Length: 376
Ligand code: AHG
Ligand code: MN
Ligand code: MN
Image 1 (cartoon, protein in one colour):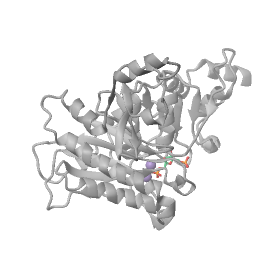
Image 2 (image 1 turned 90 degrees about the vertical axis):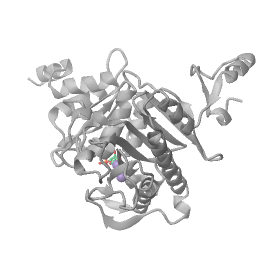
Image 3 (image 1 turned 180 degrees about the vertical axis):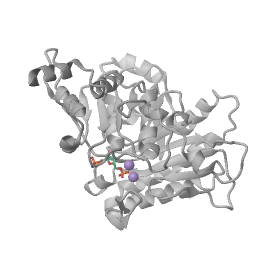
Image 4 (image 1 turned 60 degrees about the vertical axis):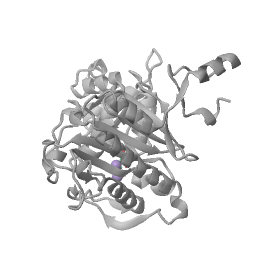
């Protein structure tokens, strides 16, 4: 009875559903509610008395795009959607067919709703404008249509990342500008991602905590499955492309050595997990805790991940869930971007793990003093 059939039913208290007696099971089901994402968004909007419903309609359009992308991802191997377009994008990376398709689907779902004044996409060199024949609204959307594209052909988890800002001057109905896009991450009014894994899940926040919805393909709905997710304050997993080790700074190398060194209390060594899809690695970090890193290195002094399309939305989710996101020295959400495709190093996850990493980067951790003493 507690199998997959009930995953969309949310217990008000989010009580564990294991080891319950039959009577208790029945009682706890009586307290549960089936909540679609549309219903959830509408209920959340009621908490903002001035809300006009425009934002809810914007999110409804976006979830349509995500449902279409999820469908295409699920059937990609059957429909000639795998492989490369043989085009190289603005980041110097090969564009996969699904990258292009996902970008187009999001554009076609969002361009005519009247809610947005401009968009920016990881797959487009400049701003993505709203066609002149459609009304322009007060919001701005930025997105990474498909994250983890190098994993597509091997059927490994990929995702879509998005965030929404208000335009700087909401009284205007002119096209949005680059300044509307170049806003620091703390100004996001909504951030989220869809992850196309063993199931499709949509994770989003509007600043009222983080809620996770699981897609039920039989009814075509995202159902609230994990309300108000909190990231553990400390984890035991680190996630980084350790192939770059020799190119990192010494203090980061010391941190990784520390995580791999057994401790008397048994809390170390940490385990290593790395999918190579930021969405998937951050999603696991949200649920299990630990730290996800994409650091700078000698050949990539700003790291790889893009501040606007990848880092800020993921950072907003992790921060809203009680974790932290840092470029090693400061909260990434405080950075004011100067370029739409700007990259930044990033370390995000459990608050205590990120704080400890920062301590290492400042050279202030006791482990580093010991390492010095030993090498002296
Ligand atoms: P995208 O597919 O949108 O270009 O992003 C790929 C990114 C990110 O998802 C992942 O964390 C990272 O690339 C992996 O890079 P490495 O192969 O250098 O580890
Ligand atoms: Mn990406
Ligand atoms: Mn991408």
